[in-house]
Structure formats: structure tokens, C-alpha cells
Image 1 (cartoon, rainbow, N blue to C red):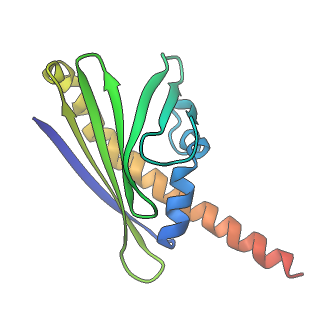
Image 2: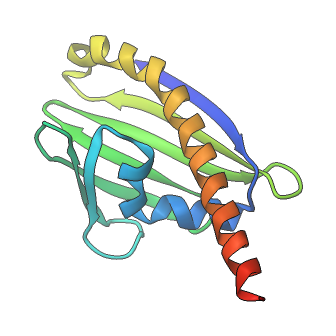
Length: 151
């Protein structure tokens, strides 16, 4: 029915990008519309999470097909449908990672959400770019911190 995919490149090692993204406490750092994000345990298949948008109701989700360092599926259940976001982390050259998000919606009431999905098509590329830039900034800060410890 509805499908959208976008990729960005991030100038960090794949493992660093993965560690940043799988720490859900970083999600509000990247997405200003998220007030909080909590995972019910380790970042693995079957784990459930709750995100709280600023000024909105909590959103429940679940992780599927977590492939450590490589990708995961994030599913958000909404009345009559499910938003499925497939994330991939791929090596794209020396110290570069390609982050890809493929979003789809499934379910009997999926068509009811098409107007909101148009907004997602507009905001996903901006959000992914912000994610890549934030990861790069954290990597730079981490490297600087290690360098300063030498003195």
C-alpha cells in the first residue's frame, strides 16, 4: 500500500552509529518531537518500547528482526494498522555508514493514515539527516575526549 525509503551517509564507523541509535535515550536528542523513549530491556528482537511525543499520548512499539550492528525492524501499532520501519546499517566506505529506513504501513485501516504518511515522507529525510549529523557530532566529541585524556 504505502512504502517510503530514504538513505543518508554518516561519517562514522558502523558500530558507533549502531551503538548510538540502539541507545533509545538518544532518540529525544535527535528527534525534538520526542519527549522520552524507554526500552523494556536490551535492544533485541521482541523488546517493547514506549515513546512519548511532546504534548501527545505515549506510543507503544516493538523490535523485530534485530541483527546486531546491521539493522532492526521497529513496529508501531496504531488502531487498525501497524507502521513498520526497517532500519539498515551498512558499511559505505572508510569510516562511513549508510543508514537506510524503509517505512510501510499495513492493516485493515492503513488507508485512514495516508494523510499523516504524507507528512512522514516530508520529515523522514530531515530526521535521518539530523540523526547522521548528531551521530557524527557525538563521535567527534568522543574522539576529542579520548584525545584530551592523553594530556
